[in-house]
Image (cartoon, rainbow, N blue to C red; front, side, top):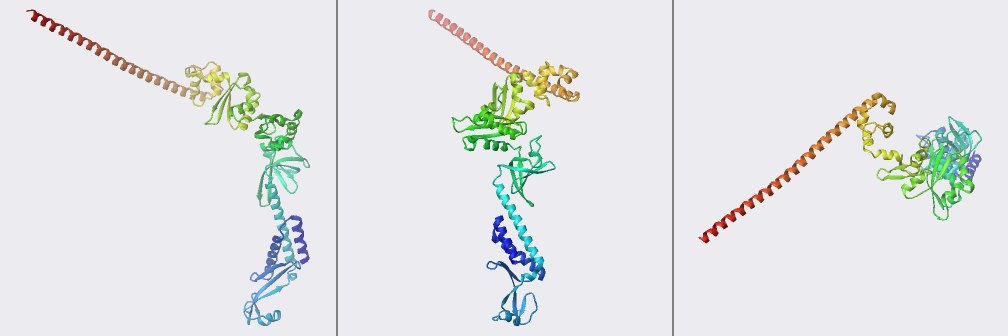
Amino acid sequence: MASELKRLIEQVSREKGIDRQTLIQTLEEAIKSAIRKKYGSKLDLDVTFNEDYGEIEAFQFKEVVEEVSDPDKQVLLSEALRLDSESEIGDELGIKMDTETLGRIAAQSAKQVIIQKMKDAEREVVYDEFKSRKGEIVNGIVQRVDKGAILVNIGQAEAILPQKEQIPREVFRQGDRIRSFVLDVKKISKGPQIVLSRTHPHFLIQLFHSEVPEISEAIVSIISAAREPGSRAKIAVISKDSDVDPVGACVGMKGTRVQNVVQELRGEKIDIIPWNMDPAKFVVNALAPAIISKVIIDQANRSMEVIVPDDQLSLAIGKRGQNVRLASKLTNWRIDVKSESRYERQKQVGYQSLLRIPGLTSEIADKLYESGIGSLEEFLETSLVELEDTTRLSATTLETMMVEARKLLQKDEEQGVQEGQQEDEEQGVQEGQQGDEEQGVQEGQQEEKEELEDRQEVQADSDQVQEG
């Protein structure tokens, strides 16, 4: 047993990189457990590994007494003297046990402990290695497909590519080579779980790292990336060297570099966008090749209203809104694309009044406006049947909207009356003040005239008295 244990310890320590002292301590605990299992749990034991002989030594300690009351912990003086001639009453005597007598159970227990420790150490080594490789690309071979998830052999470990992390319509079979992005490394009871991804934006970034030397040399940087896996992607790039075109570096000679990435992603189209520190210019670049007329920025809500010519609207939005959706992810700005005609229409008072009706969206307002309904009054004057045909809304919904429209119209009329009364009152006050002022002036002038006439009469009387 001793030679077998020594061989196992040396082999595991050398081949698996497990600390030798850790294995020895584990082995000592395993032997101690086996002895107690066979002879009882009350024993006072000391189990050590003898480095010189490469064997386990187990000692049972007993107190030297004249009369034994507990055989597991006490030994007679006469017996102790046979083992050690210098033994005395009260001494603690270590009696060496024959581990060979433990038999097959103890040996098997020790083997199991070492094997288990080896597995644990292997798992720890794998976890430490792949924890540091998180965010990198790994190559592997498909082992099997289990409930949609692909199990991949990546060398020392087996990784999992969940179904949600697979590119749509992508098919792999057993034995196929596969490249994936290390998304996460988890420590679970069965060992480390390595989660892979082929849909993450950083997988795209890492593929360009491997294809474009300027990126690996840190001359060109990828600022951000946005993907709709299997369909389309956008990346924003910038160059530290003014002589190096970041877009051209990523495209490569005759498009070879970007094509290698496209092939790996099963034909996913990639737009390479020059990054700009000005958010408006960055958004304009991200929406290319559409021509942009105007950009209105709402910094507080981190949103932009992008105005484009009518013939550029579908190009800016893209198929099923894909272009503007990717541009929004890439720039981290909320983007609302509008045509010039719609933008001008929305500035009109009548159009804005329709948007005040609860539940009436700008899309419905556009349909109403295009059919000649451009205000609350016209909306209420239109028949329910015609509104149904125009908006494709139910009669119940339209009736609710019409009730709300009447309330809004009545509110506007009341507000107009109040404003008119207020204006009349203000005008009356102004006219009253003006009349009082004019009347005061006239009365003052009359008093001055009468006073002047009185003075003239007094002067005439005085002149007559002097003459007399």
